[in-house]
Structure formats: C-alpha cells, structure tokens
Amino acid sequence: PWLASSWQLIIEGLDSKASPHAWCIVHPPGVPASELSDQLVRVLLCQDLVNDEPCGHCVSCRLRDAHPDLLTLAPEGAAGMIKVDAVRDAIEVSYTTASMGGCRVVLVRPADCLNRASSNALLKIVEEPPSGTIFVFQTALPGKLPPTLVSRLRIVKVAVPSAELFAQKVQSLGITAQQVNLASA
Image 1 (cartoon, rainbow, N blue to C red):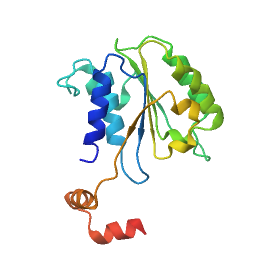
Image 2: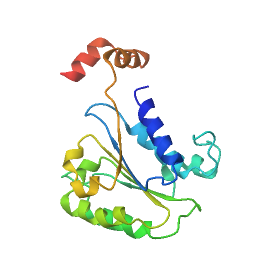
Image 3: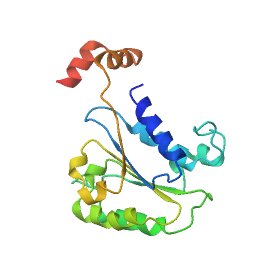
Image 4: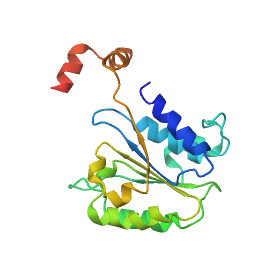
C-alpha cells in the first residue's frame, strides 16, 4: 500500500508526451520497493496494457523474468558490485532490436552497487539511449550514484510506510511482533 503514490507518479510519467527513458526508484533502507520496479518493468514490456496495467496474457507477460528484452544488472562476485563487463555487455545488447518487437528494458538493482567504472560506462548510454531502450534503476542509497548519472534519471521516491500501515502488512503476512523485534535488532 505504501507504493501506491509512487506508482501513480510512474503512471503519470508513462502517460506524458515525453515519457522518461531512465527511471530511478529511490526507497528508504529497509522499505521494500522491488515490487514497484518489477511492476514498472512488466508495464514497459507488456504488449497489450489494460488500464495502465500489464494484461497478464500476452507472450511478454507470460515470460516474466525470462523475458529476452529484459537485461538485469545485479551485484556479483565476492565484492558484491555490478561489474563493468556486465554493464558493457548490456550496453551492447541494448543497441540491438528488441526480440519481442516492443522495447528493451535494462534493470539495475541495486544501483548503489555500481562501481565507478560501471557508472561511467552507463552514463553515456543513459544520456543518449538507443531508440526503444528504457532504464530502470532501484536504490536505497542514491548518494552513492554519481550526480551526473542521477541528473539523467526520473526520480520516483517511495515513502516510508506509517507504523500502523507497516503493522497491518506484517500482521497480514503472519509475522509476529516478536519476529519483527528480533529482525530489527
């Protein structure tokens, strides 16, 4: 429920004349926001949107995580960083035509795991993306991203859920107060 206002901002951006080619979902540490990023990716890849939502029936919707037009950049290795070689590979692929005829989406999550070389490699393509390529960054630590990269992103901030809303969600998931206290410790 705490993602609803952020989702509304995304829908407004998607419906605008100049829809952004690079998004950044910024969430407070500990506040889950992957659902928001994943929904944005599904909307971008869906071939038959219904009221700004994925249809759930087209080939793109059924492929989900194995979608050929979705490139995911995630931390790897002992250092837990997004490596420059992975970024360069994604850049190379993003200059090709989308397999499903729609757009190509590059998901960078968590974006704060980009090292300096990886960030610099992404900077030029985010500034001047190939036609049909959209970037979705997600981070809890936007200050770790270079300001030159951040300036090219449409920032969508996720609000901190109220204690009451958080408690309701936790309860609906069957998590006890003791488990919450233990996890927060």
